[in-house]
Length: 261
Image (tube, rainbow, N blue to C red; front, side, top):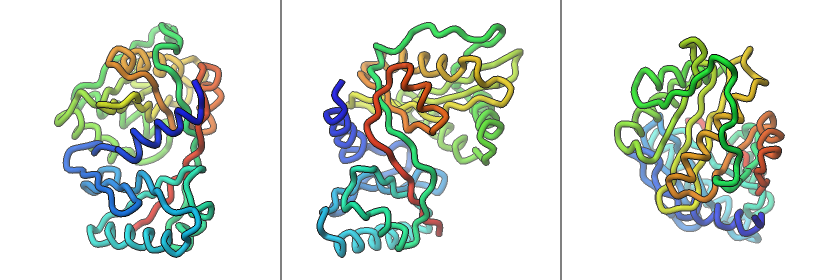
């Protein structure tokens, strides 16, 4: 794999030509910006900005237009800024406009079919596909225990997707004696080469036993079976070394800039 080619393909298929990721959502291109707007519990934000590298005032105007759009809808939103986006000082301009940066993540990609298969689970642990409200509650429980954050919004998004378009999302929970101890989901992007791995989390006490690797392997197999060549992750610092050992390639970094209404 060649990183520049993959980065360009990622930008084209998942950002510039992005499709709505849930019911009630719409993706539109306004000037040099591609954004998604949906219900309050959906992901709302800017996916792509092809802003002129030398037009600072134009960038400021584009930022102001997005703020006005989402404020009019009463929605908080996120501007996903990638390290190679222009102008080079776009992050500073977002900050000056009132958007606050969250933790940066590393965009990593691997060929789905090339990843290890059959990564063993710890003794007594089984994987179960999430198909109903009970499974979604277990995913939410794992996320809240693993990350210490309110994950009710994730639960609503996942329920929406499972009800409206189950072929574009898959989720799995790892159970130990019936207790959910790890969970993850995968977004399948129809018509693209990519599937996105999201939300891999393991509760304290079960970390370091290979559950994260097993969930990556499980989802990569499904992605390959459904015709997606690559799997992509926005990786936190804790996940990056594991993914690198599995064979993932680093493409760039991304930082969410958040505007709260």
